[in-house]
Length: 359
Image 1: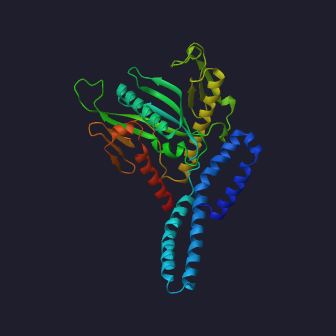
Image 2: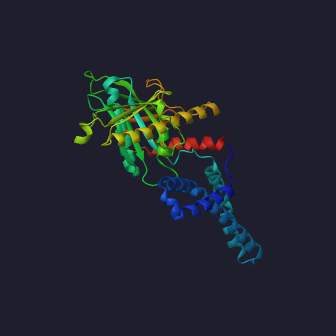
Image 3: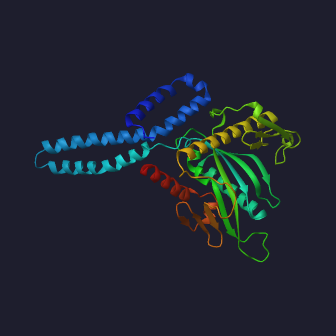
């Protein structure tokens, strides 16, 4: 798919500006949020296009002044013209990069699932470390997080946990644009707390990330294709959470996708949130199928939580983190696990941009 023209983006930006200025649009919160997200998404393109156009105009004026100026002034104007001309290639490159078709989900929120894998209790503890890492990173970014469902392990980790991570305002580079790279098998090398002889073990946990498309997802679900079970919540919560059958588990029979939610106080609230999660999961399956058909080079997420299928390794003895997709290595593991993910995610984002421009 070719990139849109600058004129097309400028026209869309002007139209969105008019629509967002209409109070009637804001009566529908979902529509207003969608338009606001798109407006934010193309804003950097518009800014870059305007800066490039202004620089070209300034260059034309500077060159006219050089031609018209006397001997005592043409040197100064020539210097200004040279500086403006030197800026244009970088501005053109930036605009070309911004015009490359973005991931359509970049402005979306996410559903993030962490599963323990090989390694028993140590894997569950590592899953807990990953969850804390994402929660701290979300806190740094000012995002809202919510635990939708969790199966804790005996030693304090997680066998399985699902989180909702949301930005507070519609933005072009939303939660998905950062956390989409986290899908895959994460491997840890360290001495487990369960190891009595001090030997280093390797275990793994799986992370799956889905765009949280919620009620706006274009997925139609037939109620006849659902099996809905209710049960008593088992997690931490108030009296109404733990003593009533408010938790909901929904199975989508055609695909076998199972989602559950037990964080809300009422069965209806849990059902509605579980349906949002189900729509997002089904949308992710549809996106994967479309991407697989279009290209065999797409980045895949975890299929099995096996130690050999890893995207990233967390080596505690060396305080090292290694992302195997882009060759990133750094000896700041403790900082990363405390939520400092900017450098590793930045390296992955840069690789994605370079690949997109090179296509």
